[in-house]
Length: 200
Image (tube, rainbow, N blue to C red; front, side, top):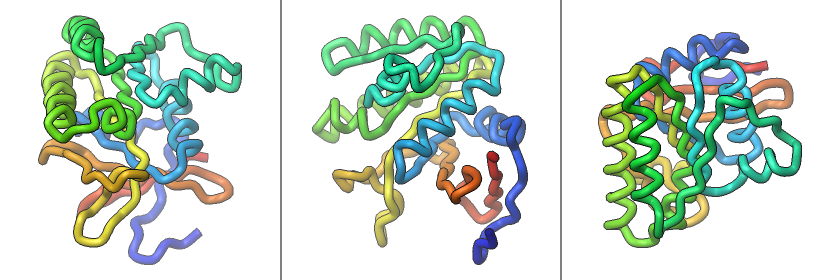
């Protein structure tokens, strides 16, 4: 498939290039418009790495797949289900782990954050927590990935879908997009020097 004004697609079934992106940009924000594409991408990413994974499941989609048997959970995947009442306690446990050894941390998803914390001040607090976690991750060479179901809106950029809230991100945040054609996933990065990878 040829995409107008798009970079050449680089085959990355081993996730070598994508993992390099995530290690260079902490946190990394991975956006897509279809939940199944997000789930497939994360499943394949986690299966491509040997380091342990902390999976912060805010929308419970991944947990649903695991419990139904549609996805097999690796032994080195630790799942957290934070709620508004225990967010800080769960965060302390995650920070304790990430400060001691290398992890892949997946926060799935921004939509779950905004559903849990409906006021902007609380959402900013969660964003600050993600930035703190990212700062600690740098010290142990860990990666922090935050997913989001989003769509592009004129003059606003990418916004959470549904709901239309603008995504909070910092200058250090790497922003990536996932979409799928009939045969493979396409992973692209935001910016003028954008790269694109395909996962068959």
